Length: 348
Ligand SMILES: Cc1cc2nc3c(=O)[nH]c(=O)nc-3n(C[C@H](O)[C@H](O)[C@H](O)COP(=O)(O)O)c2cc1C
Image (cartoon, rainbow, N blue to C red):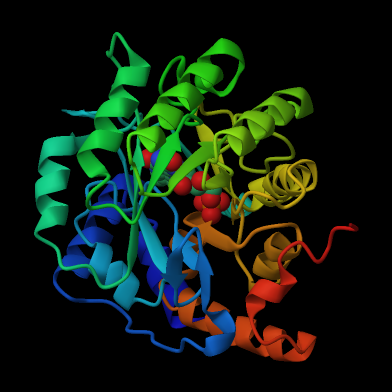
């Protein structure tokens, strides 16, 4: 049994949100596993930004931008702060995060608990960034106008974010996912277009749910290409519950992440890459635990990947291991950059 797995047995006695706060505190005090085994093979430029390696920490871990540099120093190629809403809010009533160890999964219904844009902006503007930091923005639960919350986020963070993610796919804010379809999505795209026309240079990415239909996807992709959206993130957590072994928490409301999400999120990634003919850079996220999972995402169209749940189950040394294995895999494929493998699993 690995050292982390022994610690994990103890850590799992602590309630999930407490354990998460402890992890943030440990990172703040400088307790992290340094990892710098980057290689030319893993470097690439995507939406105009230079990444040392393709592995990012997904949104939701460092919601309040407390430890972005420590995360980069732990070996990640980039990190995504947030989701940040204009006003700080407490989120849903606890308990709201559940471990499903039999499934290597989590269910969460946090509901965008965060300090709000003012505090997070202040914190980030005092940080001298050690790597690529994206900011994931959302709408307040009680807002009257969700679109105007996204506009506030773009305006607030465009000068300090390396990229901005528009999160319209969390299942834990009522009505949020409606923004992914029909008139609502068109209005969102219009808002982004106006910002770009007015000189916005910060790359804008949109994060989608894995539960969208092919028809919804086609319309999203058409509008995204037309309005020069810089990237899509596929995907957020799912509301689907299939083949979940854990009986105690399996039916808790919220978004499911981890291994059971791998197949579904890779399918939507593949569909988007195919439909868009590789015209929009994609970030693949959902269920990644191994370097083989990363290669699978890349071959199905991801230029970059993100993960979260695997860190809970495998510990922070996972990143160093994944990078080492990715370098070996790239050498085995005989490529000069991992980037050459993007979409290679899809027939042209
Ligand atoms: C506890 C928790 C909180 C999350 N919070 C957010 C969030 O605030 N915003 C967001 O876009 N995604 C959030 N996510 C989703 C992750 O960013 C990611 O899309 C999802 O967990 C799938 O990746 P994974 O299987 O590697 O965990 C959260 C996930 C977890 C487990």
